[in-house]
Image (cartoon, rainbow, N blue to C red; front, top):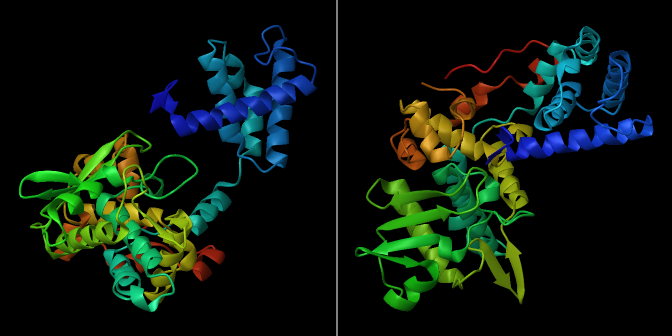
Length: 364
């Protein structure tokens, strides 16, 4: 959602920056946070002192000043003071060293995850579920990872978070013989011996609005496999209306799928395949799906339909490293997607980064 010319998340960050500015100006005995009646010299001094305080507290001076300036602009207040030579010079002097900033970003850069990681999780958490202390929890963890890759979704869109961004039982539909059933209706209406042809996953509460993903059994063996896994899960789970799809009940207690469970499983299997633990995360599933789509030779616009990005530039950043199939599983099945070796080569090794001998992300 775009509000006041910026995305919701950015708007919240800008609001926090302005609140810190108001608190700072109040301590300096300035009654009007927009400094309407102050002379230019005093405005410059206040802004420079605020930037110095921001830098000492470890926050990004550029981002903080962008938030304050946006608040002035939104309130239709003159913003020319932010272009004053003294303010610009102070902001530039407080900016971090570009070399150090680039290295910092390299260290925290997440790697797009190849489908081999999802397959490894399936072997350990789905096929080997009975050997684990909590089989239903293991199966639920795998399904969350598989759905994240298949739909190129953010983990907050299907797992339990502090908000309401998660899949409910009525958000997944099964097509059998031309008719659609929810997870709650399927087994009551059709019984257990039924073959599902298509699964429709409706993401109602995502960052950029609702989106729908279809998984068709006839697409390829990987999609058919996930369709069967989801159908079996709904049968085992016996979902009720309004309940969270990826959750399990044991001894009267409900355990929900969380980003922590997803990340732990991905890191465990990613390290086994040779990836650096610090660079493996749930968001790597979304990045890996986008990169695999690009590897199949599809356009940014087509990938954007799958990811739900508002901006094409955001999609481009996710298509990190190779030469849209709206079905990432189909790309992986044809061997055209990102491989483990590709993922390992995408980013520099930790020892190389520490010695400041690094390169930008290379194309596969």
